[in-house]
Structure formats: structure tokens, C-alpha cells
Amino acid sequence: MWKYIRQYLFYAILAGLFMIGEVSMDLVQPGIMSRIVDYGVLGLNNGGIGDLHLIWKLGLQMVGLVLFGGLCGSLNNAFVHMSGQNIGNEIRKDCFRRIMTFSFPQLDEFGTGSLVTRVTNDITQVQNLVSQFVRGMIRTSMLMFGSMYCMFRLNRDFGLVVLCAFPLIVGCLAFCLAKANPLFSRLQAQLDSINAILQEDVSGIRIIKACVREIYEKVRFGKANDELIRTQLRVLVIFAFMNPVINALMYIVVAVILLVGSFEVGSGAATPGNIMAAITYTTQLLNGILMLVMLFQNISRGIASWKRVREILDSEPKLQDGSFAGETKLQGEIEFRDVSFAYPGSNRIVLDHINLTVHQGETLAIMGATGCGKTSLISLIPRFYDATEGAVLVDGVDVREYNQKALREKIAMVLQKSELFSLPIRENIAWGAPGAAPEAIKAAAVTAQADDFISSTPEGYDTAVAERGMSLSGGQKQRLSIARAVLKSAEILIFDDSTSALDLKTEADLYAALREANPRSTKIIIAQRIASVRRADRILVLENGQICACGTHEELLESCKAYQDIYHSQIGEEEKHECA
Image (cartoon, rainbow, N blue to C red; front, side, top):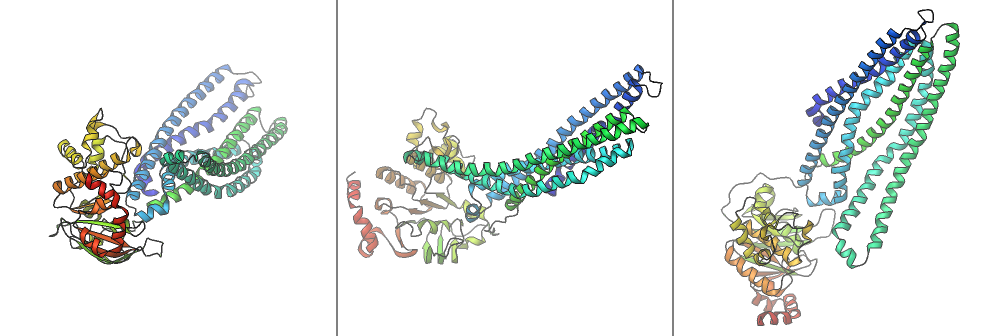
């Protein structure tokens, strides 16, 4: 954590100095009060005659010290927050930057709910750790040891009384913290579960309502929340037990001080003012110990959270960047050389010895049954995953040798699930090409067959899109995603079943416009409908992760049994399309 603390160490040091000033004023005041009582009120040095002038003089001194201590406390708070908040800000930004470098398997390993908890709640706990350490550690240490020192200076017997009780208090504190510490990590893990359920349910609220599963989800969330509350209550019960015990010990100390003081006042070894000051110091010591309890609680929780944050910060991207970012003679050529692939952590082969070349400007369609490896195949091109065996080449260079940014700038993808952001339509289309001219954005929307429905909205391209595109239909979301890919003007366009929500006429118009607008781009289309792929230069049929056949629509109708079965199952739809 030092690399973050040292950036704002100046603020932390100032906060510490002002805290020393505040606590020093607290420690000075009981001694002044003792003099007011003994010499100003009781007049022990003047034959029992009080001294009003001394009361006023010492009283004004106390007021001045209180005001100065309050100013120190306010400045301490300001600098503590400046250091803690800035440190949290730097950690949070570094965590987010690191998450953006994670590969898909790493994201799956952490889980969305856990990442949200770590970047929000855990870093807040770390901020509190820093703030409490700077503020609390100085204050509690000075109050405890300063009070003990002042007690011994005031009266040795009073100091010994407090010192005898000190091991019991520390023992109680250590026992309770030992019981509570293991629960803090469990608390954060349970908070992960709650965030994961909440994220899933908010994202899938439509299907939950459609399937009338609200009660089930309420119960599921309730169980996770009950687990969190049970753990939280265990922590609170531990500290609820500790505080009264420590209070009781300190009140016993106060009673013993009064008892000892009564004898010493009678013998002239102590004064009433000494006893009042001793009780005040004992109270300050009690406050210091109670603050220490809360301090250790926050520090323990902060350390548990810091360990979780460190897991993000210390995680290296599993897909290491290559160094190649130069120009290539080829543009848009893709080659799979004896490629096999299995997902990390799984032994099941998804792709088995794939050999395939897609030339520049060619349109390749991919068909096959669900789970045959279509999406896995195209995910290797932008290097979302690395091939288990063999090599994937883009423009003659192994994708593992590319700088990932340079590689992905060559590729525009439209995924199965259309991802839109809570931004105007214009910014959603320009997401992959920031700064694009309005004319280019409109042209991309026209190609994607989206301009008509965009123009029909009251605000046109400035229409705001609801979170995750909830304000749009499935077809509208797909067309906006396609417009985003078209605007990027990439060498390679990949459509992963991204026209499934479009009617056949709109889809046909889209591909016709796409051929005209991007004739030099290499296009890979995954689809389930014959109408979507029949005009492709070649159609690849996958079966169980292997290439079953590859050829034109007419060639496959003659030679590929799997393609024939797909064609005949859709023949009615095809005939309707031809009539249209």
C-alpha cells in the first residue's frame, strides 16, 4: 500500500501533527482543572480562601486551549480525508485499469459481483483503514500512554491502580479481536454473493417477470442476505460483549482511585483536585481504549479488504501482449493452422485441428448445430482466447505476436448479445470510432438499416438509450450494434449470429448494403438461417468442433448431408423469402 500512501504522505503527516496538537490540549486540561479546584475554589494554598482571579485566569486558559484543540481537530479531519480519499481514488482507478486488461477466463474466475464489491466496498474499507490509522492510532496511543504518564506524574498510587487493570483490558481486547477477525473476510465474500445475485436479477428482470419467478428470486436473495446478517451479528455480539466488560473494568478502576484517594486526602498525600484530575485521566484512558477497539476492528476489516483488492492489483493478464504493431502487406486475411482449442479449466476439445484460410474481401459464412464451436472459432481471431494447439494468423502474423490494441483495431465484431450503453444513439454508434463525423455516423446507420427507426424518434440520433438498451427492441439493438461495427471501417467484420432478430427482407437489404459500403472488408458471418448465408462466397459447416464441409451454397447442397438437412428444414421459409 506504500506506493499509494507516499503520494499523499504530506497530507498524512500534517494530519498527524494536528492530531498531536488536539490530543495534547486534551491532556493538559485535567491538570489545569486540578489547580482551579485546589487553589482557585478550595484555596488550599491560601488558608481555605478561594481565588477568583486565578479561576478566571486558568478558566480563560482552558477556553483558549479548547479552541486551539478544536482547530487542530478540524484541520486533522480535513487532511485525513484528503489523504484517505485520494489514496482510495488511486487504488480504485488502478483496479479498474487492471480489470480492463483481464482475459475472459480471469473475469469469469473473479465473477462480476465480486469485482463490483472489491472496487466499491473493499476499497472504501481500505480508505477507512488509512484514515483510521492516521487519525485513530495517534489519538488512541497518545490518550492511553499520555493519560498513564500524567497519572503517574499526578500521583504514583493512582498510576499503579490503572497499570494493574491494563493487562486485563488488553487481554479482553485481544480475545475479542481474535474471535472477530476471521469473520471479516467471510463478510466480504457474502457481500460478493449478494452483489452477484442483485446484478443477475436486475439484468434478467424481464425473464424473471415473464416466468413469474419473483418469489423464488426474493427467497434466493433473502437467504444470501440472511447469511450476511448472521455473520454481521456475530461480529456485533462479540464487540457488544467486549464494550461493557471494558467499561466495567474502568469503572472499577475509578472506584479504586476514589477509595485510595479518600485515604490519601485524609493523610494529606493527595488533594481533591488530584482525584478529579485522576478520574478525568481515567475517563480519557477509557475513551482511548474504546477507540482502540473500534480502530482495531476497522483495521482488521480494512486489512481483509486490502488482501482482496491486492488479488486484483497483483493479477497479471493471462494473455500477454505481443510487440508487433506494424503494417502488413496483407489486409483482412485470416488463417487457422491446425488449430485446436479447449476453454481454460476444461478438458473438452471445442475445436479439433481446424485448417482454414479466409482471403481479403471474402465473405465466409459459418453454420452448424448449437455448441459445435462457431463462436469459439471467431473468438480466437481477436485473441479473446489463445488456441490450445496450432496458430491463428491475421494478415500473415500470429495473433500472439500482435499488440492486442493493434490487432483489435483491424477487427470489428457484432456479438450475439447486443451491448449498448446508457448514452445517446449517436455515441453508441460512434463507440468504436470516437470523433466520427455526423455524416459518417448516419451513413453507417443507413448501411445497418437503422436510419429509418432512428429518424422516427423525436430526438433522432440524440435519443438517449436506456441501460443495456432496454428502451429498444431486439432488432433495433442489433442494427445499432451493426452500425457501430460498420462505422469502424475495419479490415475484418465478424457477425456472430447478430441478425437473428431481423426479418428476412431487412437482413437481405443489410447484407446488400454491406457489400456495397465495405467491398474490401473480409466478412465472417455466423448464422442459423440459410437465407442469411446463401449469398456468401463460401459456407463453412462445423460439426463437433471439426470442419464438416466448406463450399458455395450450390456445392454444399450437392455434397453435404448436414447442410442439406438444414436447407430442407428451412425450405418453407426460403420459398417465402424468394416470393417476397
